[in-house]
Picture 1 (cartoon, rainbow, N blue to C red):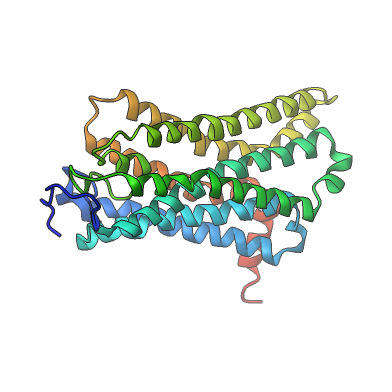
Picture 2: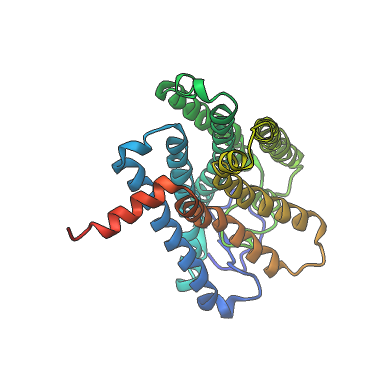
Amino acid sequence: MSDSNTTAFKNPSSFILLGIPGLESAHVWISIPFCTMYITAILGNFTILFTVKTEPSLHGPMYYFLCMLAITDLVVSTSIVPKMLAIYWFNSREIDFSSCLTQLYFFHCFSVMESGIFVAMAFDRYVAICDPLRHSTILTSPVVAKIGLAVVLRSSMVVLPYPFLVRQWPYCRTNIIPQPYCAHIAVVNLACADTRVSSYYGLFVVICVIGLDVIFIALSYTQILRAIFSLPTKDARLKTFGTCISHLCAILAFYIPSLFFSLMFRFGQNVPLHFHVLIANVYLLMPPVLNPIIYGVRTKQIRDRLLWLFTNRGT
């Protein structure tokens, strides 16, 4: 299918992904940092999974949720980056309509899932600090499994309407998507029908799902901070707060770029399109890259296990 195929069609057989519009000549150079970030994300998250699996002392609620976070980061990055690199390296810009919807679903589903995992981790920190004596009885393995299942089911069901709504719209304008992956709003914008249902539902997901997650996390940390400030000594307060640093850093790495990107998308009309796309791509890869680094550096049990693995390999 030609890039210039913008004639009227009701149901396109495929879409054309443009990569970074306006910077096609620099795609090979642009691919280097993204490829490096992707490799770092793969190695880092698999290291987290291997470390938790092989160390019995890490078989607890916090680390089970961390493993869920690592799996989610692997799926989010893998659903986007391989096709992105194929565009940059081989100019493979065409994507089948069904493949586009599949990519769209997995990307948004696991992004919502990641938000839910942060809520579960915040609840774990709340119980551990505000009711430490009951932590092991409240967050048992079956309860952790049920929380994980609830997070998976919620994200799967919430995002499920996305591809069905996208599939029903007629596409008579163009089949060119000015970015290197199929995002919900990017595909909807190509339709030549009244797509307010898709737009409103996307807004509902952002406000009523992601927004509620942020509120639950904020409420959890309000109670956590109250409990910390009620401790008798400064050392006890610092030590207790230190157990939350990794989670807080991961939350900031996930939500702050998302907020910045949303504001730029809505109010940065004068910002060049290629800058929008570059920022969006960096935003997608930041959490998968940073999360294993944050937890590997900040969590003593993981750090000690990794040091033991590396120093005892040859013994």
